[in-house]
Image 1: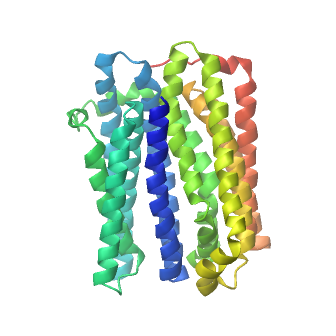
Image 2: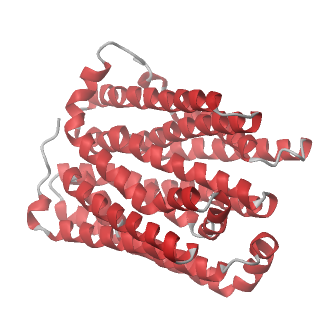
Image 3: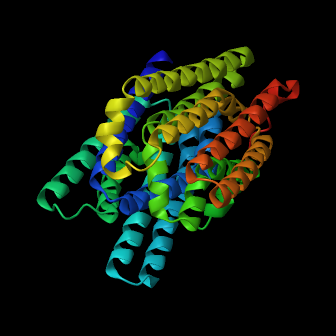
Amino acid sequence: MIGRYVRAVASQGVVSAFHFVLNIALIRLLEPAEYGLFALVFAVAFIVASVSNALFTVPLSVLRPGSPEDQQTVLEQKLTTPALVFGAAAAMFTLLASILLSGTEATLLGTSAGLFIATFLVRTHARGAGYSRFDASAVLRADLVYVVAAASTIVAVFWLWPTARVAWVLFLALSAANLASIVTMTPRNTVGRILSARLLQNYEPYWVHARWALLGAVSTMLAAQGHSLVISLVKGAESFAPIAAGFALLGPARVLFGTIQNVLRPEMARTLNEGQRQTAHRQALFASAGMVAVVLGLAGFVAVFWNVISTQLYEDRYGDEPMGTIVAYWVVATLVAATATGPNALLQALMRFRSLSLVGVGGAIVGLSLVTIAVLTTSVPTTILAVAAAEATMAVGTFWLLLRKKMLRVEARP
């Protein structure tokens, strides 16, 4: 198990390091409005992927470890097939929407963004499926392919085409890298049945849990990412750019939370299936403690080198923005979110999706309400404190659920 954790952390470390370097470069290379669009589409991709994750990946990760060996591949096919269909539907929807937009640039942005969102959610599902097979090595190989393909493509395009420093070119490059990664990590025997007339019937047994996981995932992502939509709609993408630029320093830690949960869920599901509930609780607490340590370490690094970071990264394009305050606010919000990493994974392994969804709805209501008030009445940076309040609401709710003794019982599985 330790080896899988090491490979999973290494895998996410490679991807997070690449995204960190990419964001740092784009903050300096792109105009604020263009970078704001890039960050906004990334936020939308995370929200859409969270829907797919709730519908297909989470059920797979908690059901496969306890299933008979001869049913595990069938289960993965049943839940991977609709994930692929969902990705294709996302691509088609944005393609049709982009055709209706006026102007070549708008159409290119809409089409490339749709392709990126679709491939991003399928790659996210494929990574979760790999962890549900306890095959962290395959995920690591695929992540290396993604980083090499994306980095080489972006560098080559920017070098050969210096004027191509626009968001739609980046989305096309990242989409190609996503596809290469998906092909690398997906076993051929899981794609034996892509479409059939029984697709909805095959998925029906999982809907009873997935519907609550869906509600929880969407509300949680709105609590964590909804500020990007509100700010962009009210103030414009350019106003969201400094918020996204400050988040870039903490982004790798936030992504790591999701990866740890993807690794923990199947591990905990198997542990619970074996009746070792206290072991699962220890895993949850250890995961949260580890994530808090990561955030504190990253915050300490940023604090020590802040003068250099501020001068080299923000002074050119965001010199008029309170970037020190923005980054400090993001540290607070990220630290709060870190505390709930392990308990959230454990409650998912216990299949307490309905209870978790209510916690997520509460966080979304708090977050979106406070973000809207902050945008309309105060400064844009204060919206980050609204996100922190939403994260705190969900963290308190998650710990309260975990402490309730009746939550130790695993719900019936389809």
